[in-house]
Image (cartoon, rainbow over all chains, first blue to last red):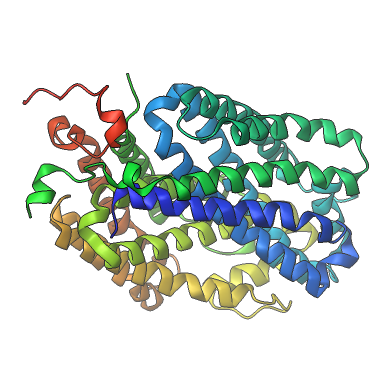
Length: 223
Length: 230
């Protein structure tokens, strides 16, 4: 039956799916170079990333809604920043998926510059606000992750360890920039695991606890 | 103030209002889809507004749906999922229009012309891969999503029924755009924008006693003071 607590519970599955994709694709992600974007592996991996972004948005909304009354403004701020980060990231992934393969042959310079936001090598072509927009993704990802993780620990509704992992994973992401690009990717793995863990706890909360809540207004229940 | 599930749902009302307002404005001010438009300030403003529609729409629609989820059943869920997918794809297209087309207008006018051809019906000299297909898919997502969500809202009798009707009719009018001259086509967004503003406002302004009542988890209720009857 579709009730608010059940919707929140189901969103746990979305968080699990997002986390699995996020952690799972890193070891097989093709290199961010022009030659990659026309390969089948690129299509598969980037397609999965697009799905991941959508699942993340649904999942994080559920994780936040479950603990909103305890997570306070800190939780809200973390949630809002994470939504902005992943919503913008969805745009970048859309470009990687639909646009880059199409323009790889006629406009390799553009593809090189566009991939530069991810691999850190600025390309020859000026691509305007694309680069600063990616910085916004990064800042919101970092700040959002830290705030949301702390708020989740303090709310004590969901387990604290995945929340700590979430905050730590967000913090170490910029530190990963010191590593070679191929290794940087692995900063996503703890974040993915944190999402899977939080999603699983949301999904597996004892039904008695969640379903016991009278989720409708009195008027609805009467009808 | 404590943030409860009810106040979250209520606060998603302003998000729906912003989504509706920005969508209506996009409809009114959208410049013609020609290469010369993409470097104008109006192009930038309108497409940033369209991105605004997508983020506030995604968040707000979740609240709009959550408010009436129990009453709208699978019809409401289907409408919600289809509209959310539409908003996510629209984000992708507008993202390209904000961040990619302007810098490419000089460097690669053929790509920009090909891209705009998806909307104005001219054929592209450049193979755009699956993009035109995806753009075509956004049509049924929007029409079916709006229709189902509007009908579900009408049947649920929680939010104003006529706003639901306006959403359903406005979305169903989507294909009419194809019959209009190019510069009038975006105007078909306006009724849907108004429907969203209406729904968002009613979500926001519902009498607190009505919306504050139950819906929290049993364990959380202990800390909740019953709202006084107004």
